[in-house]
Image (cartoon, rainbow, N blue to C red; front, top):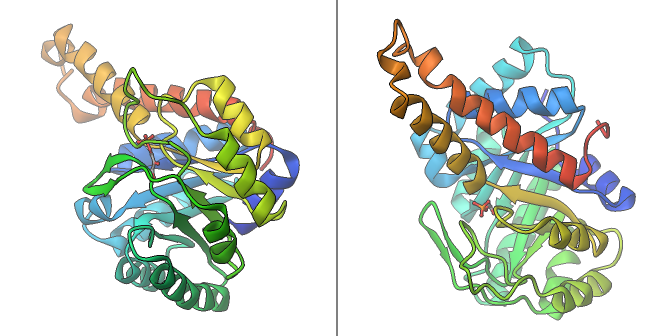
Amino acid sequence: MLVSAKEMLEKARAGHYAVGQFNINNLEWTKAILLTAEEMKSPVILGVSEGAGKYMCGYKTIVGMVEGMIEGLGITVPVALHLDHGSYEGALKCIAAGFSSVMFDGSHYPIEENIAKTKELVAICENKGLSLEAEVGAIGGEEDGVIGGGEVASADECKMIADLGVTMLAAGIGNIHGKYPANWAGLRFDVLEEISCKVGEGMPLVLHGGTGIPADMIKKAISLGVSKINVNTECQLAFAAATRKYVEAGKDLEGKGFDPRKLLAPGVEAIKATVKEKIELFGSANKA
Ligand code: 13P
């Protein structure tokens, strides 16, 4: 059964670790992440961008696939199915389709509009027992067509959004979707600390752009209140590299190496290894 992310994130906030959100693209991705979370006895959040939602034939298809897989694979750890960087309309569609968690990314609206729309979704999610993520400031870079300017969040605006009753809050602190450029200045821990103090200890903070953030920065971010960390690109890079290796070694031409179950297997193993490494770093193993 899918669960809201509320309980797992409140436990993470209190226990000084973070739960990973790993974005999914297809059946192989989903299976690899669920099996690894189960093996590690870790709660997990499956992230779905609106683009990936379209690619996987709509939110209902995804709910069916994930619920079927939880049952078919005998997954016992808490699993939340979460819309990533959703529009207001996208959030409503996911709620109707059976997602257990949604993000409304109103960071590109003026703060008054972000507040008004987030407030409406708080009421809907509360009523249905779903978790809601909101965003202030913007994550730099591009993810599935969502482009962010990388504005650093204002702690006062974070407080206004947190006070609406959202479950978790994403704040721009110099983080970027995709690979970090060589001249990246690093995370703004001064800003994170200020936000954390303003919103208070009970509010789980979300760190987007988890790909390529060095381990020491991840640990520091967790110590300052980050309880959910999103990873997408790193699994894609690991999958692509392993698939390339298989094909370049000519394995698809040997025997029945072209069978998709064989062709995609190295990529799936690479996703599993990436997820395992992140769960260890985030400290969520054995917290299910
Ligand atoms: P990365 O692709 O940089 O890991 O970011 C993922 C993310 O933040 C999803 O919202």
